[in-house]
Length: 499
Image 1 (cartoon, rainbow, N blue to C red):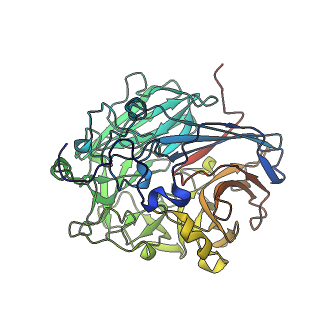
Image 2 (cartoon, helix red, strand yellow; image 1 turned 90 degrees about the vertical axis):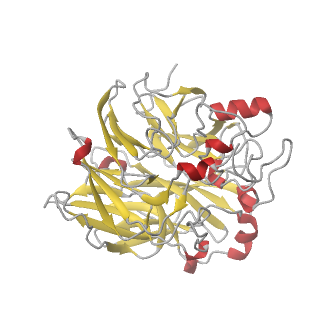
Image 3 (cartoon, one colour; image 1 turned 135 degrees about the vertical axis):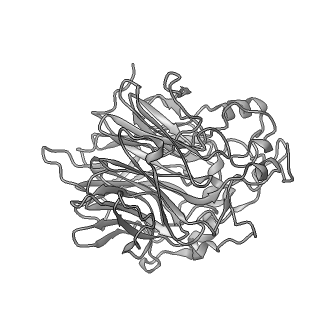
């Protein structure tokens, strides 16, 4: 091990730090709970499974001040059918998880820094960032490594997924996009830590890689999410930069750089070579999770996302140690409209389409890459009556607080809000479309896990998009699930369960 840092000793309890306390105390639950209690009525039409994954360390960390999202991936499955809901939860059996369970102590060091580990790992993944369904299996993703494939019914880990040895790169995004029967993805630092290489690819339902394109980024920095249109792929770079020499000295993988622009890579989606990528620029900013992108009637790209001029990952400051106070960080919903064929690589100034602090946006996935007129996301609106006096002592730290769900209707530019209660904060929403012969965008239900700080337990709220101000149903869990990252809905008709 290199560098200087404080490591935990075997057998210790979790550190007395905010990211391991209150609602953020590790859950460490595996098992099933049948027939969850329901307040209200779950619509009979809803038939499928909501999968989500949370970082949930099984053991006290090797590094005392470990960030909250460096825990082991623990997948939750909410199976909803006939107005009933069953719950199942299981850890992904990564190499890290299995070896630490055998050793009865943590072995992995700092976030994405192999030089601080107690032992050498082949794959350091925690599989804790996203879980999605493709080709009959769940893919548990973390962007520093290939995904793990997981059985969608039992949640048993199948293998580290290299797609039959065809995966061309060492990393795999936590936010692949599904477009019909095609999975579109990429890896950054694709040839290893500190490399500028980005590998873009698409995979069909036979597991065949239908295209692979290698490009070189202008900086070695984080590309957490991306967007696709019918003809283009967009890579927004977060100005958290990597330096291999810093890592070898025991430093952090990421360091905020306020002196570089916000880069947006634009690549033709099909039949491209790496030389065709264009790196558009805008003033230094932190791009959040993408909402969606599409091409308008003029052939310009329209790209929506939350954006802030502050470093959201404030625990990784700049080279001088500067970082914003968490209370100062707020992302506005913005829109970039630009010509992908332009030789002027300066992005036009963005349009602000939502002034309130928002993140974790979703669209009706049937319209991904196409013109969208609805978006759903987490919001923080202090005027709604949140009881911060009750929440704050019990909240725990690290994760951003949002007290409501937002539904943006682009027709009217109106944001409708769902406020779950004064002692509640929300996690990422997902959208479930209403069934029927007509495909009406945004008509259905929004489902989100909600933290109740009065009961210190979790709730699953179902909200009808036709009546967004109140819940259709609230499903009570008798346990507490700490903050998760991402998840997805899989309709029962899509869910081809293995026998």
